[in-house]
Image 1: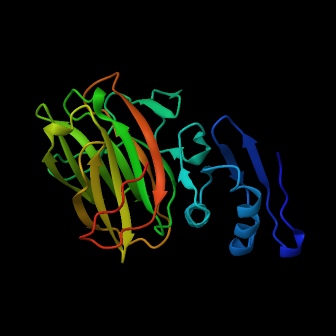
Image 2: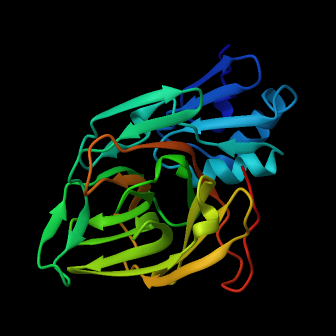
Image 3: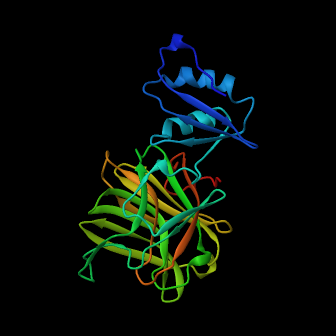
Length: 275
């Protein structure tokens, strides 16, 4: 059904609401809107009927706040790839329920110069604009991580020479959590997490004062802080899931979640666990 909110607010937008068995899928193309007034109308029209608001679009931070104030949970699943674009197209993608299964190209990676002396810019990152007002989280299944340098996680992107990839990678037969921070040259930090094998991992980034706090957890393990890194780009930031397979063909990752949540309250306070 379609609902059109009062023209008295002089709001120009398009709202499409599709009824499904468990939730509504809400898609909007706001050319111009007055959030507070729209929120009141949407609360009246929508919230009595639903508990979940699935939102697709490139600028979701304001809508995230609206969903929370309406008592709804905002989730982003992978049934619509219009959300972002790939830096390099993967071998294939497949929808399996609300999971996005992606197969990486053999030899794919992101790296700039340091130690090895080479540049690899053919990794797979699905990127959408990120203004930093909300934290961003990506979740994925580690069950397929078996070979050297199998890797996936969250990519923060400003450009080809300025990016951060944070996630899980197999190194010397053990899964490690870590981050590669790149500004012309890459650096790599990592820590073994053998107890995470086969779990669902969530990587999170929260932006504050030209820096990001990167955290990670599993479905059974609490948040741990992975890195505090400079990311001094107030504009033109992007974020989204990534995967690479430097050493083998056939590596697939099942991504289960890509969402925006309230930013960190404090460096030393764990964020709530959502999703």
